[in-house]
Length: 115
Image 1 (cartoon, rainbow, N blue to C red):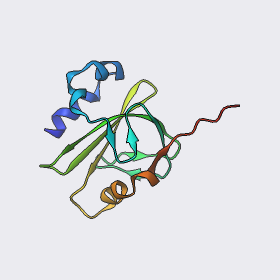
Image 2 (spheres, rainbow, N blue to C red; image 1 turned 45 degrees about the vertical axis):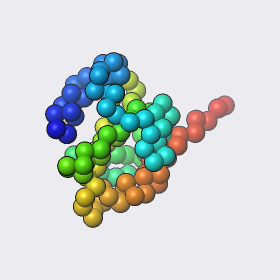
Image 3 (cartoon, rainbow, N blue to C red; image 1 turned 90 degrees about the horizontal axis):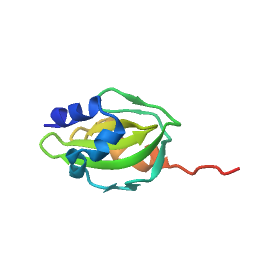
């Protein structure tokens, strides 16, 4: 089910995602993340899909979903009008669980500098 849901996001623009009925399945807050707020990757990490999330990446949180059967957490973001997905598997004692347990160290609130 997780792979089916993610395949819906793989080729769509963020505008299509926001209008999709599947976005309603995503909850608006997770730990310190709140829908519509901007965050920055503050510590590099690798997710379940082996995707490296680099320091300095600015993203807007859209929501999350948790799949208990797979212990899979999907965090959905907007990055420059494209979807940005972070998937973590939480049932293993590895770096993905460590990221989740210390999420605010990896994905921090983004404070824009005004000049």
